[in-house]
Image (cartoon, rainbow, N blue to C red; front, side, top):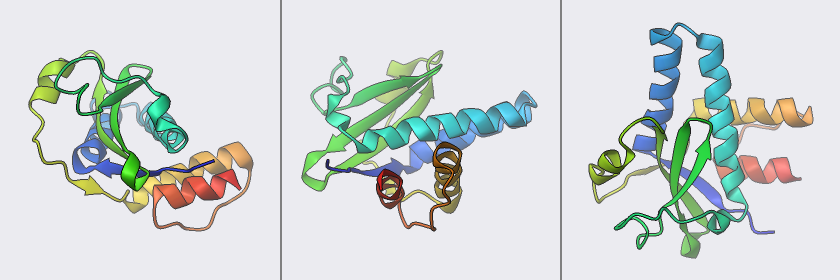
Length: 151
């Protein structure tokens, strides 16, 4: 089975951080914030297998650009599979109660991709630890991490 790389845009990483900070610091629910962000990261990690199996976002111009959407509870995760590079670019993570169309329309045409930072990798490792009981070695990317978890 082909394992796709997963990259987060700067905006997607900021979205995830914003979700955590809002719940932890505004709603004063740090435990809930931690569980939710881990759950979202776990959902994103599933994109490493058959990301093109998820439905296209039906609104234009996004549909013709290959944008796809998956939902995780009250959050929509938008991503684009880049087949030539076997890479999934996570574009945005948006609370479903927001005006998603406006937010997408306000996105710049250029998208900056990030390798996940050490906090994201650590969260992915914790999820894997809970699922498998094994402790993975430090990895350089989400794709390497997901590959290790498949072994």
